Amino acid sequence: MPPRRSGFFSELIAERRGLLAGLIVLIVFIVIALGADGRQNPEEEQLGLAATVQGAMVQAGLPTVEVRNIDWTIILEGRIATTELKEAATRVAQAQNGVVGVDNRLVVPEPVDIETDILNPPDLPAAMEDLLLQARLSATAALTPIQFESGGDRITEESVATLNLIAEFFSANTVVRVQIIGHTDSDGEESNNLTLSTLRAEAVRTQLIARGIDAERLLPLGMGEYDPIADNLTREGKALNRRIEFLVLPDGNEGLPAPTTTEPPATTIVDQ
Image (cartoon, rainbow, N blue to C red; front, side, top):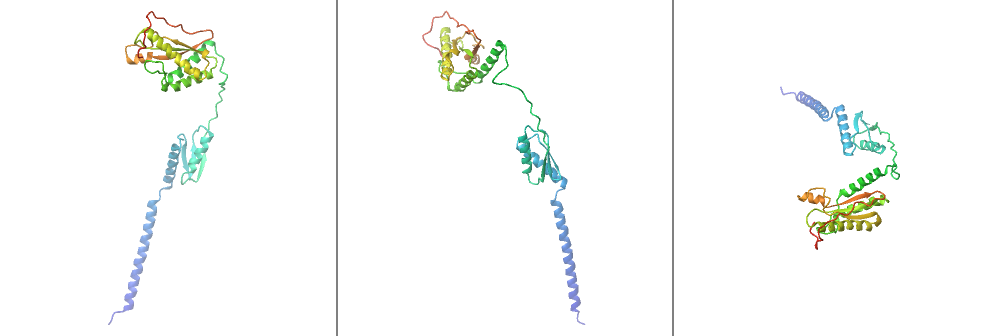
C-alpha cells in the first residue's frame, strides 16, 4: 500500500514546531544571561558613583569633602573653609552622571574675629618699635641683595626690584631715617675699598631719592673692609662681605662713625 503523505507532513510540522519552541526558549535564556552579566549589583553601582564623585571633588580642589551614596543621592560631609566652596561642592556633585540628588551636609566653621588695626599699630616702646622696623627693612633688603657691576658703583638691573621694595618701605614708614652702609671685602688697598664702599652707598641713596624718598632720611656711609661678616679667604666669604646694609636710626642718632685709614689713597679702584 502507498505511504500516507498526510501523516508524514503532520509529523514534520510537529517536529519543526518543537524545534522552533526550543529555539525560542534558548534565546530567552541567552538574553536573560547576558542581561544579568551586564548589570552590576546595585550596591556596587552606588559605590562606583560615590567613588566618581569623590574623584571629582579632588580634581576640583575640594579634598576635604567626604562622599557617600544612598539610593543615588550623594551625601557630602566634612568641613569646608567657606560658604562659596560649600556651594561649589554641590555643583560638582550634581554635574556627575547618575546623581539623582545632593544632600550637602558640609560644615563651614564660624569665622574667628581677630581685631587688628594695620593703620594704627599698637604702641610699643621706642626701642622695640625701632627693632621691628629694622627687622622688616633687613628682611626686605635680604630678599635679593643689591649688587654692583665689578669694580664700580653702578647697580645691576637685577637689583631694581629690591630698590623698589625698599622705596615702598620708606613710603609706608614716613618718619624712618636710615644709614645706608656700604661694605667691601679685603682685596686691594684699604683706602680704595673705603672709597668704593662710600660710592656704592651713595649710589643706593641716589636711586631711592629718584623714587621719591626724602634725601634727609638717607645717610650714606662707607665702611670699606672694616666690618666683615665672613672670612676673606674664600670666594664665598668675600661675596658675603661685599654688601649694602640699612641701619634704622632712632631720633637724635646720627648712626655709625666713618672709619679711618692711615694708608695713602690709591689712584685706581681695584676690582671688587
